[in-house]
Length: 139
Ligand SMILES: C[S@@+](CC[C@H](N)C(=O)[O-])C[C@H]1O[C@@H](n2cnc3c(N)ncnc32)[C@H](O)[C@@H]1O
Image 1 (spheres, rainbow, N blue to C red):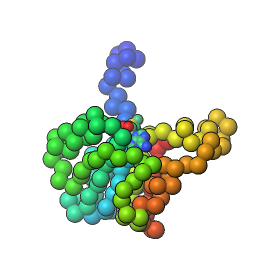
Image 2: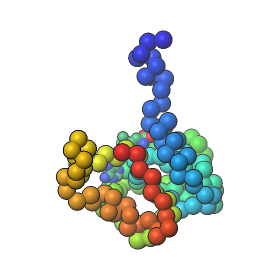
Image 3: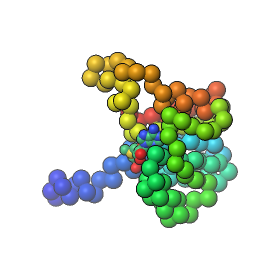
Image 4: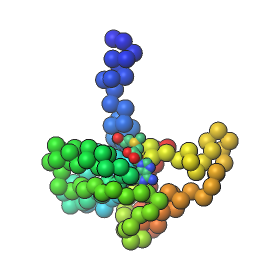
C-alpha cells in the first residue's frame, strides 16, 4: 500500500474528534457546545435527552455537518454559523464544550511558548461554560 493510499484511508479529523470526545467522559443528557465539528461523535454519546450545538465560521462547514446530522439520524444536534470570539449564548449555559483544531496560532506563539495577544477565543468559551463544566481542546 502506498503512503498516499494510507493517507486517503485515514479519516484524520474523525479519529481525533472521537478521541477528544472519549476523553471528555460525557454524561447522558448533557448540554454541550462544539466549536469546529466534534459534534457527531458527541451527539451519539450524550443520547436523545441531551443536546449538542455545533458552531463554525463558514456556511460550507455548517452544510456539511448538517448533512452528517441527517445521515446519522441525530435528533439531539444542531449547527449554526457563529464565531467562537463572539458567542451569543448566555453565560454558564453548557456543561461541556469541545473545540477541535480551531487553531490558536493567532493568539499563542507555540515556538516560543508565549501569548501573542489576549486569547479572546478561550475567554468567550469559558464564559458560556457552567462553573463545574468541562472543556476539551485539541490544539
Ligand atoms: C481544522 S477544522 C477541524 C476539523 C473538524 N474537527 C472535523 O472533524 O472536520 C477547524 C474548524 O474550526 C472552524 N473555526 C476556526 N476558527 C473558528 C472560530 N473562531 N469560531 C468558530 N469556528 C471556527 C473552522 O472553520 C473549521 O471548520
